[in-house]
Length: 498
Image 1 (cartoon, rainbow, N blue to C red):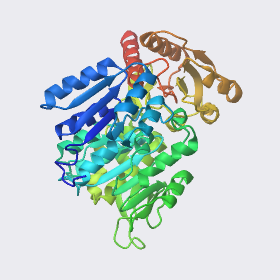
Image 2: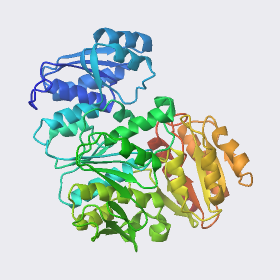
Image 3: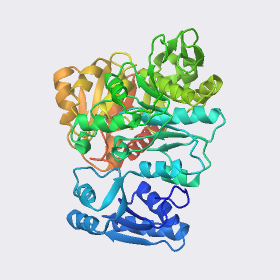
Image 4: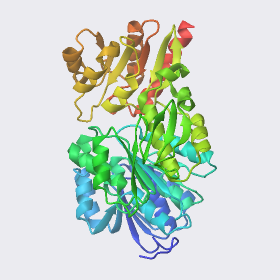
């Protein structure tokens, strides 16, 4: 393999299984760099989309397409035709026929992220650090906080990986000073040689067990975020799982473990002192010195109603993580503070979409795990939340979540093909809390029903929050659609009430 950025893929064969956004990006970059591309997908439309994009971006692309809706037949084609380097979609589980076929083909299987790193490592931006983030919850908030901080420092530092443009595209285009990289467990599964300057696993809770097969396998993939870390392996002191990952990680010589706490920090930690985020890790003589890098007041705009006292604890945790990663990259305190003030949350993450008759309506459709939903509801007063919950639980048991949030609940509106994932724990742990079941229908009909049912339960001063603790796939196209339709129906209700 050539060490030249321009020749890394030239004259090689790159096989791509799955032509979603990242798969098409891999195919385009590989073809543009002179590789022969062999692409596989089940959907004819995916092949058509790739061909159209290649026609617009690459001259004389050498591409072979294998499209087959039959999984067994497509798997046979992968075994027969895949060659050299194979990049597989992160959505394809190791237990699937396509993954198994790829694993026995004469190829090296890698992720899009791994290929992006290999290009980065020999390219003109090789000195630009990667700051990597994973975790069950909070990844997107943290990576966008981090990007905001880096940009406040004056750096060209986009959020990439599991957000934004495909990372392979960003690396191919170049011109960046640093990358804030969100990594899912799926992406980490086949990522091998990435060398982040600093890394963190924010937290760990049971999720995607239907993909990984077990919590142990899921945790093992999450732990890969720390592999090869050069300067700072960051972890939350409250997370025993993350501490174990750091202790067992194969990091570069000189890498330090940096802890995050919501208390007064010790040496090599970040913490909270009198409403300030304080660094005792990346300061001269940390045994004697500490540095205020931001105030919690910088996060007040992220609290319901802008009230600092209602700021969810997980937002503070995400800000601590973003600040630590940024400080590892040499960012000045003023930029940390400004970046947090400038940060705006992404769509469907604790967004107040309306206040109607003194009832706040909050879209947290991206809350697809028990851990995320527990954090979203934790800051509310007793008997003040109408919770819209349910969907595809992805193999998770939601009993502990229901027990944990029961005190804040006024009522529950239950989504999902299998509402018993919510209703059975409610009967056991919160029998006094009334609930309704949305039932079945089109996505628009479901949104109309859930909002109407929630409105019938809510009282002045309450919060109606769509934080399902489940994926959306059983009744909606995506959590985006679920949140968008919820917000649209709430807006329509606000118009009728107003």
